[in-house]
Image (tube, rainbow, N blue to C red; front, side, top):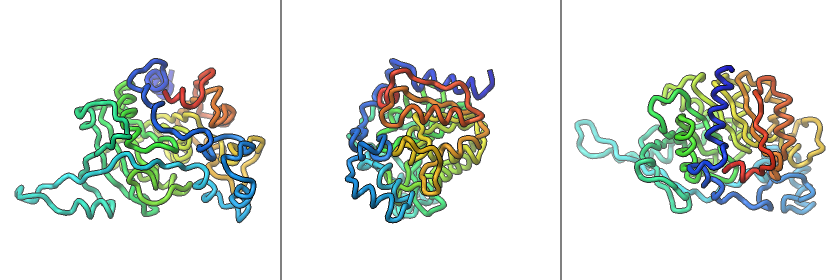
Length: 335
């Protein structure tokens, strides 16, 4: 069995094994109801809570995939955390430099402390929280991007670059990351998309790609992590930036958890081709990935139909044996 397959098997044993107490709380996060999930809902007959007139305006005036994506796919929650600048000693140890607020507005490097709000539902002690490092970086599109590095295992061989779902932020995911990293003996690096948490800007498809590029570069330069030690993990909407990055860079392995083939194929299941105005075209990029790819999907997923995972598996030449979770829907698969 190759390195990628062994690694992916190890990830599976921790990330989706049934009855895993440290990870079970993830299903308690305030994911939106079926009526609120927008593009990640399913066929258009459900209308995604929109009228026929609104749908016509979205798709026909004119068809702009970026705006369609932002309208239907992104549901950033009210931020569940903040970043508090840590004082930096002046030369000679006299006092602290008063530049923390300025760094927060410009996104330049600085030392920060994570402050979680009650609704983040943190499951661990202050000791575990102290293993979480947070900082700000800047994307190529000029947005300030919040990043989180969870040191679960000193000297870990692998670091997981995790792109989360469409209705959570780093605060809500922090407990999950600690549990995941501890279970699979990896460190976890994650980031908030533009418009999520304390990241600036607005959520959009173009920003997704710029955001993960910024996270990738920060992980490599700030921590000196080489590509062959990075596992890219994307969940639902997070599979979009993950596939895009993996199609351009080689890494240790790629995990696609409940992936979508494209925006049009989610909204209109009978769509057979990729149109120029389609959003999130994973189906056109997955064949360009050169690293081992594991696809995880629940066979009864009502948010992103199982057929999406199957289609991507069939299109991806580097796919290893997939994990089809019989009878599982997306929320239970998260747990």
